[in-house]
Structures are given as structure tokens and as C-alpha cells.
Image (cartoon, rainbow, N blue to C red):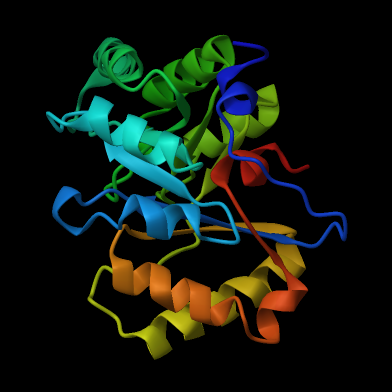
Length: 225
């Protein structure tokens, strides 16, 4: 491995126009996983988030990596885990999914629940050469500490398909994300590895609004400054 994991295992990405970035992370659903051929045919890179507690997590990592995409690892911390519990969970997750470019929180935002937990997570990401993605909660302690310590981190801007949104709805969410990216230079969206979600993203990417931004993997979005 050359360089930290967030670079060594990143999906290939380049945007010579230096446009604002819309990072898209799709949570792996083993029963809804797109075919390898369809993944390899995409004209833009995606990041697929694999749940470390899933028995097939390592195989899922290999599946997406072989299709040319990068992976993040989801670490479902339990409420009240504490700094030591968080460290143990994340260490185990990275052993299971060693090619993860980043660690991802769950929607209840346990990374943000306690400042001591947040501080330990930031220390681990700095030491391991990875970034992390979490959800907004309270004062967003983890995000604040990461920004202070120059550790790659981001907050989820929107979930695009948890309520089984149709293609038009997903397109509207992408429009909103493009607008926000124009203001903030980067945003991160979360969805699921459903073929219909990917089809909606492909369709949106052919439109005029998409030309204003670059669809990017999480690694590039986290490293953007």
C-alpha cells in the first residue's frame, strides 16, 4: 500500500474543471446489490458502505473493489459505548474491511453522542489514515474536532432513498444537493445499493443541473479543502 488508505484505496477520480463535489455513498444491501457489469459500466465513481457487523462484509468489500469502486465501513456503535467501546468496534471493523477509505456512522449519530467518543474516533482516523462520515447531532462534536485537527470528515447532507423514493424524487434531492454544493463546495448524500437508485443517479447525471457539479467518491469529497 502506498500512502494512507483514504488515498491508496480510493476510486479513481479527476475533475479538471474543479467543480463543486457531490459525494454519493450507497449503503450495501446484499439482496439488492447491482451486478458487477452494471457497476463497471458507470461513468462516475461511487462509494459503497459495508456494515462491519454483516457476516459477508469482507466479500462485499471485494465485490465493490473489483468493480472499480471504493468502500467505507459502517460501524454501528451502541448508545453509551464510551471511548474504549468505540475504539474496539472501529478496530474490529477495520480488520474486517481493511480497504475502507473511511468509517461511517449510523443515522442515530453515535459518533456525535459524546465529546470523549468523538475525540477518540478522530484520533483513530488520524492514526489510521482514513476519514469519517457522520450525521448531524447536537453540536456535531466529532466534526468540530476533526476540523480542528485537520482530519478528513463530513456530515451527511441528505438520505435520498430511505422512504423508497421514486426516480423523480431522487432527482429533486440531487438538484438540491447540487445547489448546496455550489454554496459549500462539497456535499455528501447517502442512499442504498438498489439498482433503481443507481438508475436515478445515472439519469440525473445526464441533465443540465449535473453539469454544475462533479459526482465524486467519498474519498475525494473528504479530502477537498
